[in-house]
Length: 452
Image 1: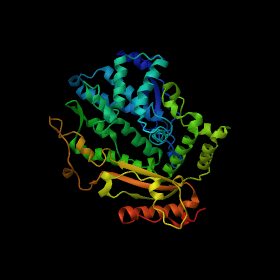
Image 2: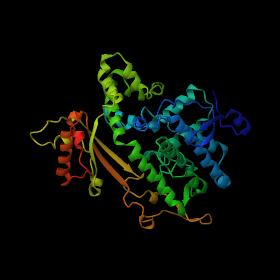
Image 3: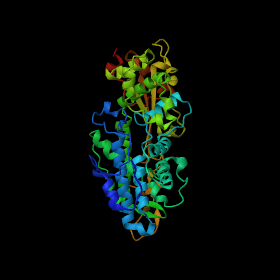
Image 4: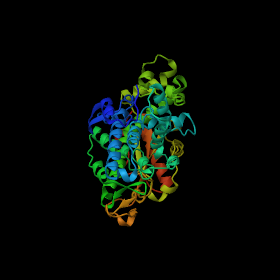
C-alpha cells in the first residue's frame, strides 16, 4: 500500500476512502493503515460511562479531518502571504492522523500509572513512541513519503512536549500549532476529543470549535485569535477541566484504573508487558485485550492478576473512602500524599493498617497551564485591520471567570471493604495533623464503613 504527497488532486481524490464519522459527518481519508481500533479512547471510563467505547482510531480520524479544515482555512485567507503549499496541507493532516499511534492500552493510564511503577524513573511518552511507530508503519507498508515530510510530521506530533516546542522548526512555525500546540494548548486534538468524549458520555458540550477555526489568523508566524473570542477559548479549557473531573478522573473510574495497574504490575514478570515499549514491532501488538489474555490464561503465575480482573468484573472494587482539595495556600509546595502518610496517621488501639491496604490518588486538574491564566499565553488581535497582537491579563477578563486555575484532589481508597472505616479515620487524622482541620467536604457514609 502506498501513498504519496502528490499535487495531482484528481489522482488523490480517486485514492480517498469515504468514512462516516458520528461527530464530523463525512470524512475523506488517505489510505494509510493505522492500528488504533483496539485502543479505547477513554481507557476504562466505559465501565462507568457505558457509551464511552469509541477508539483511538475514531479520534484520530477526527483530528485528521479538523487539522485539514484548519490549514485549509488559513490557506484560503492567507495562503499566498504565508506560502502554504499542498504538501504543507498534507503534512498537517497526516500528523493529525498519526498523532496518537504511540498510545498504549487504557489511554494515559499505561504511561502515567503502570510504566512508572515497573520502570522506576521512566520518561517514556506516547508522543515519542508515535515517532518510532511512524517509521515502523512507513517501512512495513512501503508508504511512499519523502523523508523531509516525515520529519515534519514527527515534529508536529511532539510539538506539545515542552522540550520539543522549539526544536527543528525553522519555518512556518504556525503549522506546528495546529495538531499539538506546545505554545498555548489550543489545538485540533482538543477540539475533537472534547466534543467526542462529551457526546460518548452523555454530557452536554456547548464549546464550538468552528468559531475559532473560521476566525483565526496567522501573525508573526503564530496562530492568533480575535479578542472578542476569548470567552470561547476559556470555555475550551474549562470544558476540558470539567471532563477531567467528571469522566477521566471520576472516583470509580480511578478505582478501576488502580486495580488494572495492580493487575498489570503482577502480570508483568510473566507477560513482559513493559518490555514491549522498546520495539515498535512488539508494541503494536499491545492493546486493551491484554486483560482478556490475563483472564483466560491457565498459568498459575497470573492468578493474582486474574483475581483482580475478576473482582472488577464482579464490581468488587477498591473502595473510595473520601477526598479533599488541597488548600490553595500550600499548592505551590504540595508533595504527593502516599499510603505511608495515611498509615502513619492511625490512632493507637484500632485496626492496624498496612501500606498495601491503601491506595492514594493525587489528581491534578488545571485549565492547561498549571496555576497560571491560560489566556496570558495566547496572542489575540483586535480586528482584521489591526497588525498588533496582545495577550489578555487577569485584570482584563470577566470577573465571572475563575481567579484560580488549578485544583489538586487527594483521594484515598481501601483495597478491602472491611478496612474502609479504619482507612477513613486515618485519612481524617492525616488532614487534622497536616492542616489543623478536616479539609474533606463530608464524612465517609456510615453504610460504607459498615460494609463487609
